[in-house]
Length: 191
Ligand code: 5GP
Image (tube, rainbow, N blue to C red):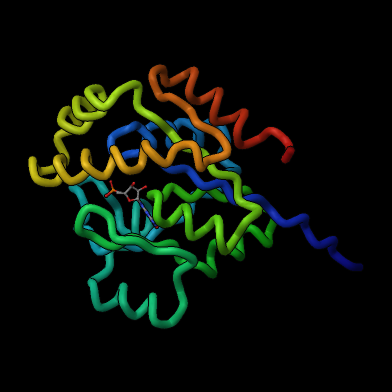
């Protein structure tokens, strides 16, 4: 008996400034659609108190990260606010081969690299209602130092200026509305 090869899955790239609420949106999305796969990135950033190795990130040293770049293990990588972040290539391609829809939550430079190396991906940008609201959200989550917040806000302005490069833009001012917009963006058939 032969087993049918599954149709290849889809790659969804989600980008948006730090503090815009991507984490909350993605957690809710996964609850509604457990079949969606989230790629786990490698980073040189130290873990936050609630983060779990292998679930939120693979926390690696700079040396390990450089080794991953040198051996071609990363589909894309970037430096963001003083730390390095990258997407392990093989587990991602394996999931797509199995027919899964895989979500990459990455920053702008990485999203641009994926557009080059994997043009079939669908790119979604999450916008804050305003920069003032973004600053408020970054401060109120209480996870980052003043210096880190300032770096993240500066980076946010650059990222927001590039929002039009993305296939879909969603303003995250209401969680439920944003979730529906995200579901539409992910599950609507390719144009
Ligand atoms: P955080 O330190 O807040 O977890 O993440 C900082 C930024 O890095 C976020 O914009 C997040 O989307 C991005 N990021 C997380 N993983 C990756 C990755 O594998 N590649 C790239 N390019 N960016 C990532």
